[in-house]
Length: 284
Image (cartoon, rainbow, N blue to C red; front, top):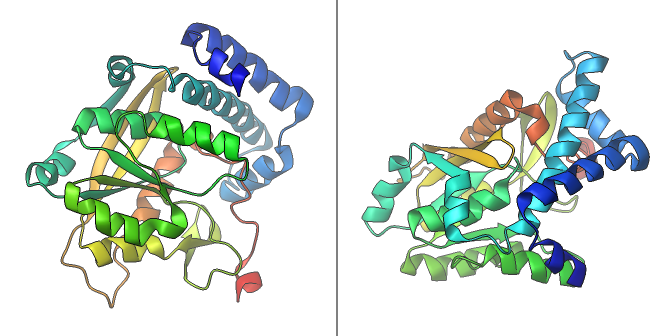
């Protein structure tokens, strides 16, 4: 961790040189999770040629290594620098609720760089963004990541404590951030199944139930890499109370927006995770 903290003080220009080297090694030497990445892309985009898939893999490795050094650098970046590097579009859909003193749930995908988006959101909207997160097995790394996410007032929420903590915090006005495209565990009984990226896919039902329990509006945050070190986040409202408990309202809208975003920029999503590790028959 000492080395990481020292590296975080380096300017981005140097960190991007390191990123180039990491991406080259990941693709040509280490072949980091290459089979998983290749399979995920091939199944999600069967219309793409072999050459197109391999080009996407190369671009993905560079985007991923950029995300690593950018997240590292975020531990030292000023609010002014982050504000310059992350631009928010169509902010009125969120700001009108904040002006009324309400809390809001935002939903995003693992599109690079979601870490900068969370931090820049706290700065832009002047309301802490509390991101729900999956605990990391390496506690030293988790401590470092949580420290970064807390820099501008955010207070990250462990996934298993989501409902009680959210119910408590929204009284003080918060933005609750969900990166909701992760795979539920095999023994999770509450799942939403749908077709996503050409495959039958499970999503956490909490994405549907949390807004309904809290009666909060939901805004989708679509992050797009404009160029190296600069991002644009487009806001779109996807749901607002009153909600119907008899119908799926939020998850179908979230999945539709998530797939549109990923198809528009395939190399920007986190393909290295085994998102389709289990088929539906293995769950039920």
